[in-house]
Amino acid sequence: LRHAVTSATQGDIIYYDNGGGINNATWEDEVTGLAARLGITKLNSAPWSSQARGVVERFHSSVLHKAARQRPTYVGQRMDQDARRTAFKVTRAEIKATGTSRLLTSWADFIADIDAAMEAYNGRPHSFHPKIVDPTTGKRRHMTPSEVWDQAINDGWTPDPLPAEEARTLFRPAVRRKVNRALINWIGNEYFAPELEYLHGEEVMVAYDIHDAGSVSVSLLDGRYVCEAIWGGHKRAYLPVSFAQRAKEQRVAGKIQRLENHRQVALAELNPTPAIEPQPAEIFSPEILRAAEEAYARMEPPQAAPAPAAIAAPGRRPAVFVDDASWARWVMENPDQALDQDRAELRRKLRDRNFKDLLEMQGLDVGALSALAA
Image (cartoon, rainbow, N blue to C red; front, top):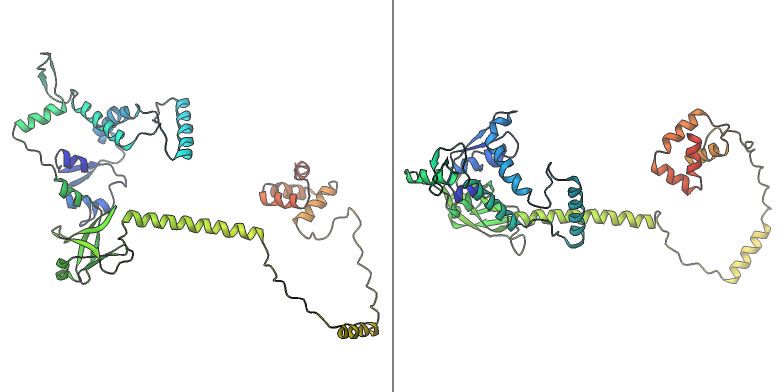
């Protein structure tokens, strides 16, 4: 849209589908929305009707898709499947190795391709336009879009492109902010202009450049320009933080935090239990040791330990298993006594990777258990 209104002419209506790309506050807000600031009427096409957008859909197919098919990384429906896989593997390998790929189209080449496609489109006769006699061949043919444009100018119509400087401000993202003592706060930066002193406490529209945080453009809510506010006041950083830079800093901070979490988990694996700090050994004198030996000799002899409880006979199923590993060991050693419920539970648990790791740590044969549970 910006290219159209700056290189050709401003329009009265923008015709769009019902998607979220245009049905949002960026377009529709009565103050900061692009439609209000450009004075363009936004018109949505009828829902569930692709024919309502037939002209632009046809343009995509006959111009943009045709230009895209000239590039090796085209991935449309008409691309050969083998060529698609090859291009995918080559680009991913080269990007991983060098950060870019020789198959990818540069931004400058992409713009050049689109410009060339548009020039060819506007220089080709269209059946929608009236017929004329070709000045070169002398044959009748339909007019080209460029010829129709030139004829409209010759008939008295004047294009009204938007000046580049005005477009620079109008196409900036905009937000509402309240003026406080000639200062406007935006993402932690404070912008000052003496003209704002008379707007203390008032809400204004602030348009900003996402890549340049040195200044913001301030307008009243009815669109009247006020001033250019310069970064200053109580600085949060040595340089003002642009919107893009702030977003990048937040992303990097999140990445660092995730790496730190992984680091803590890895360190915990090396030392899963808190270590006990070694204490210095206490050295006793010979006199204390002799007294301790004499006291020990006078002590009564220890009573005999009670006999251990009888252990269940080998092969008999215990009433209670200590853990899953002991249960699995008993099932493997006593397959003839294992119940159908044991096999069903074993099949269910063997689908868990953690359970398999536990069995391997206990020295149990996971393959044998899987065969037993089948």
